[in-house]
Image (cartoon, rainbow over all chains, first blue to last red; front, side, top):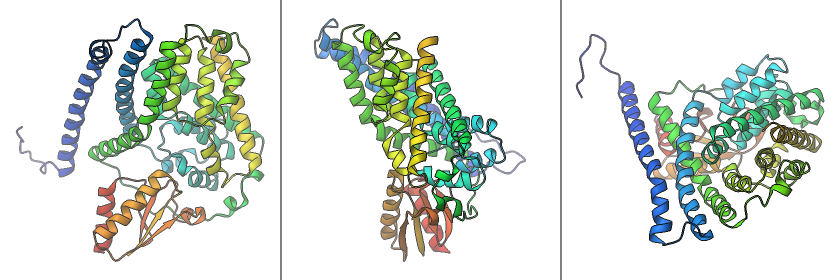
Length: 354
Length: 80
């Protein structure tokens, strides 16, 4: 490559690093695409060629499904998490708080739910974030809209839904998550539940933020995105494999439409039942979605399975334990009740419309 | 040097703490490492996400940004 000498000062080291980072990402994208395209022939060769199984047999179709889905989903997860965390490097909890400051309820709820999707968030930060929000005067209901949307509409769920279903289902899920967050936040706000927030929260002196991180360069953004991708994929790959293995067994062995009667559209009670079963279960989206996908192939309705999935992801015991530090049990109970109800309504709506 | 890791017991927080402890030993820094989980203390630094690395009462890193970044922060902190 030739470097022209311009009248301006020589290319800064940061610019050079950015350029290098863009090249690396471009190269990685090409490798990614190449790998993505050899998965199907590879899976078929492995199951039908090397293992000599028949495509018509239960075992053969289960295994081919498994060998195809595992690398495909892990590649998709990696690619999408990288892009989502890259996007998120433009946002932060501090910026979100500033944007939400002074917003009325209603507008604030919608904005909070939307920002919940793109603000970097991990449930271990739920407590400082909660205190930081309410201390700066953001209404309780608006804070809850954020706290519902952030874990529900997460990068793993979106990547898995996109990979196993379609972008339409991923989009519907995102819309459903935001709607539930808005409804839940508005209802909690209207109920005036401030008295059920632990008293110490209102007395805490929040220090002045010392560090406002300077704007990262592109090279740094890629680095952050790559680090989070490695971390998240490292955390969920086992769930993906186990989930897909269970899904593959259902795919190969459970007869078609076996579930129409109990999980189909006409079984009206299946949506609340799915939510009631889902609330105490705790897994992440990575483990649930492959199973949910297989259930749908056998006749379960989309609204029912999405309701199940959202109740598993949105209402988890570990998160409640974390939130218990700032919320009294009554508010935790109301929170679970409101969100579960909102999920049931959304489940019915999907079954009705789709 | 007075080093604090503010955390809530999550995986990222523990991994920042262990990285810091390892690097302090590796770089042979004269430092005291403290793990702070008390919410009120955490909030007094004005942060909203954990883990946070605090060197001599200055917030130097929010979120776990990798061992390399921590090493740079520790070196810069010890140079002062």
